[in-house]
Image (tube, rainbow, N blue to C red; front, side, top):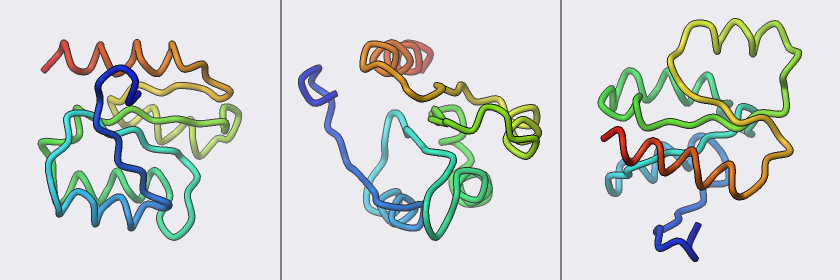
Length: 102
């Protein structure tokens, strides 16, 4: 993503991601569904509560395509998801679509 001119900030877990959102604004947020300390759905709920304007900027990454919990979550939220393993081109395309929609 950096080679495409994007500034990239990496958070090791959902709580670090929330802390990063307190520091600055972001055009796109890539979020894994399974993270330590705060998973993807928990991260989404915190964004919904504290930064609702960012909801439209989230793209989820998941390898959990068969879990009933994951399917129920995705049925409730309006966020794109990329299923792992994901190619860099797919990520670039999803980011570009988000940026063009803004």
